[in-house]
Image 1 (cartoon, rainbow, N blue to C red):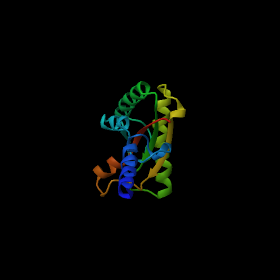
Image 2 (cartoon, rainbow, N blue to C red; image 1 turned 90 degrees about the vertical axis):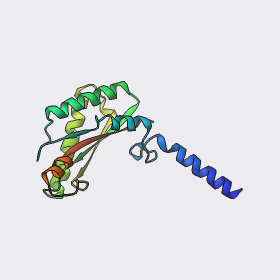
Image 3 (tube, rainbow, N blue to C red; image 1 turned 180 degrees about the vertical axis):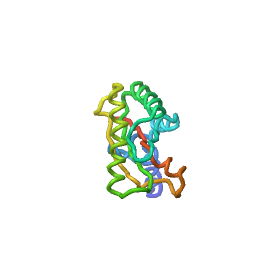
Length: 150
């Protein structure tokens, strides 16, 4: 009986894995809706070196994000700002925050409620490995992670 109850508890815990993430007080698993957004390719925008300005490609991606967020009004998002490995930790944290804020402000300008959006900067801690221009370019990004609202 004890083994059965342990197994039942494990099944219940794992089945709840698809609701929300830790950003909004739930489990660490993404919902089906969040995976759909991520798989759509709308979740990442890239930035030029030492810049938080949105390129025309970034704006096109953010227009798609805004349309998706309007269609899915039960979703909140955390916008994560990242940098490449060059520069000091303090400078890159500030740059990552400016990048995340640039994405947030653009989405707000497109009609997404500011209450649905949060920002966080990871600076260069999660930069792509390697010292190549390709790795640096991939690291300079803003990532929008969506989660179901409670």
